[in-house]
Length: 126
Image 1 (cartoon, rainbow, N blue to C red):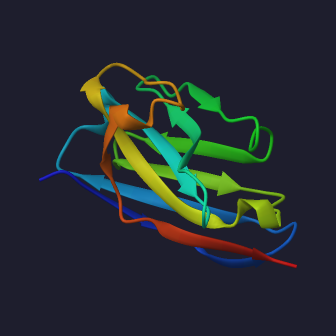
Image 2: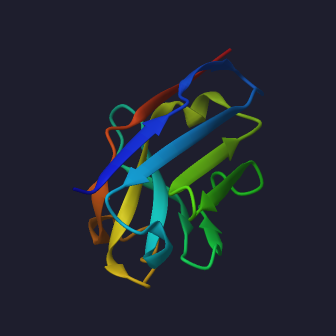
């Protein structure tokens, strides 16, 4: 059974940092593209970074230069280092896995990511 479990969320002040982690089990993360999404109250789920099987990444403009994704295929984990956080980063953060091996859907192709974790809440306060 494929399972994704996110952790590391919490409350942080504006300008602070957090590191999220996604632990995957039940499949080989080395064969599938993974991604981080987030959803703020009243807004659609937004893709923020994809990380391909070769480790290459693609970031949304909203987080580029502030967030960095790390994938460890040996440990089956996907981390997200978030720096210079602002109130606009407040959201539930989800990791997800693409539905086809060796293909990395664009961040806008949310429906092509079919396996999701339960999410971890990030709140940025001033």
